[in-house]
Image 1: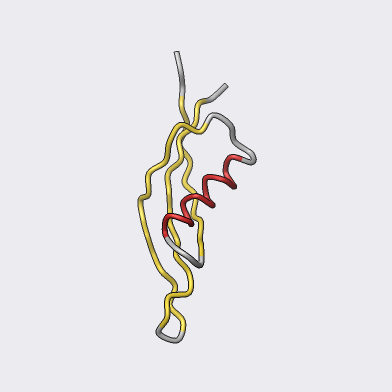
Image 2: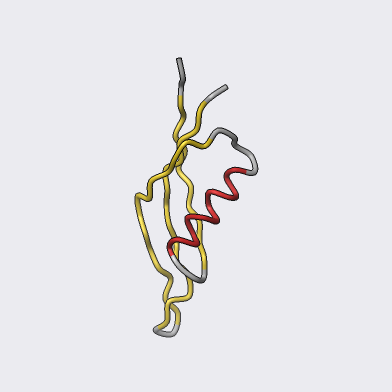
Length: 66
């Protein structure tokens, strides 16, 4: 029997939502193993001087418990 846990993380990138998601998973994988998947629950942008300066994603990441 497998048991999974879900955590919520927020990550950002100056380039794109996809890069923010990749950065979030990469950072999470430094301390959590067995990541099974993730889903983006929110996307936001930071605007400064009428320009997008940062892309942010909030994701739920699932991983198997030992």
